[in-house]
Length: 236
Image (cartoon, rainbow, N blue to C red; front, side):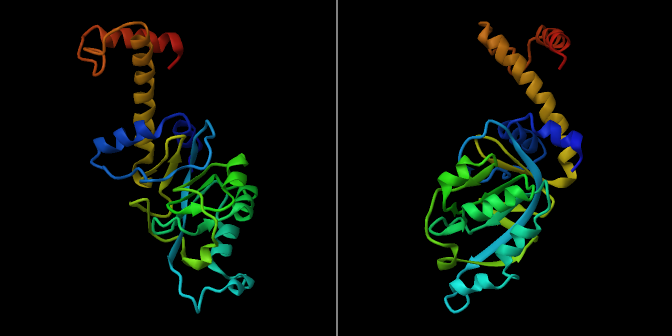
């Protein structure tokens, strides 16, 4: 993705992005019941590369399926492009793992930007210790084979009650994950950057004792020149 857009998205919160998206009528872009395996203190940003699971069928989902190098889960790990975020549709079911520590480590080493599932990861303590953003519903232990069957790669999916299309931009922070449609990502990144600057200004004003009335939203005519002066001082 464009480096300047990525840099902007690395510096804004998912909360700010959801507001910018809401202004354009997009109300359902934040993944529900999906949280960081461990906080990283930095954003995850990248285009979506998707993997979809369906309910496992016992005659097709035995342990020996992993002997096949064309198994969709293995292919997804080995073909996710560098800089992309793997997003897994696990049908919001965390009773069995979407992936484990070895696969997530391989994804990291290959240069992916992160991994997201609306199910759960096994080996979550190991995954949380990696310098790699990972998001799930909750930890789990059983193999995915008892519940999930990998079926499709890089096609539209649902994850956390949100539609995710390949190439959509995935942004995660220590609160959660938001999906930004690729066609409007430049405008959203610009607006979120402007919103973040104003909110940082407002936070400083509030810490200094100023009331939010007339400040947030900025209905007091004195707010605009104060914000302009703040931007000049801070180079924002």
